[in-house]
Image (cartoon, rainbow, N blue to C red):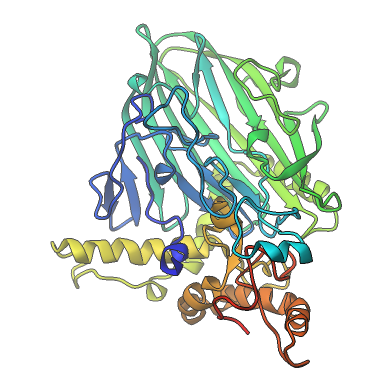
Length: 492
């Protein structure tokens, strides 16, 4: 169990929905291709509604899982009964429906209990603290002739699909031909990254080229369905701008708030033509949902490019998260996608230097024909990338004290709890290659050491002893999911 928990959402899954078919995601995979020079994993198969096909992305502070078809909200489908069956669940301890998840480092809530526990009697001593989600913010949705391009787009209308993840610079891309009707065909591409040089910033870019002149609707959506185990705080649209915002608090913790601001730039997107899309028929009804739309003319053969710039901050890390998130979004929109990506790529280059990542190439730079060696080459790059995208450096900002959860910042598997796996399995390798990033893991234990001392005393150990629970979130107390004694002992 521990070994499975220690595996972060790794090798890019990237992988068709309306057919609701099973897919074999075993490794080596026939779904993916590897570009050794660019450290790029890619696929030309679209498999929707399955968590294995989602791309996890983070920059150490913010994180999100991305749908197979693009930067959208997505929920798993029931493959045996897609039209009415129960939704697949994410397992112990929440048994919650499995869907894309976005959060901010340390965004743990407080709740009475979880669906399942190890020691239910411990709930009498205090509740649980599990990771809370923020509204799903990457969405940049295209609507043409009544058809909508989102995670559940009819895959029969998608051709020439390709999705690529660079393990060197963190860029995720999707490109394909979308044919929503027999007479309309659009070449679509999405690009997305979370800025490795600025913890509060992310950017999404949509480029679309139509074979015929048509009208389209572009919607920038912050989707409240992602705000699981969170309570609505505020939503709105800034006046005289193309900026929207949503804020939520982790459940039962109204003094903690995460703010999301999204600013859109593109030709013809003037403020006067902006409409509030929050209640549009294809958008969810949720108090944390906010959307803005524009009607855009697509001229045959001409490419239209729309970009959204997202700023995110929570009061766990900033005294004025609203201003921090708003300023980050607005400044990013002024800087522009390409310049932002240049800075983020440089930051990744300084982290993932060739001498800090295992390499299995031959002296001439090629890979052997042995598939086992090829797999080790891919895994060596993926392991480093996916671990480091969930860690921040020791740089004085004090944002880096929340350790690393089982699935990182783009997953609420195992309730996003911190297990001893972080200290025992994840930390050693990072400590050797990137000690400034590994510091985030012991800093979490130091932060919770006063509670660990209380845990020891409550269980009749000496006054000098400390005991950490099997799992923990915000507080580090002994809980139904995280017993301190009479179970597995790892950190004490």
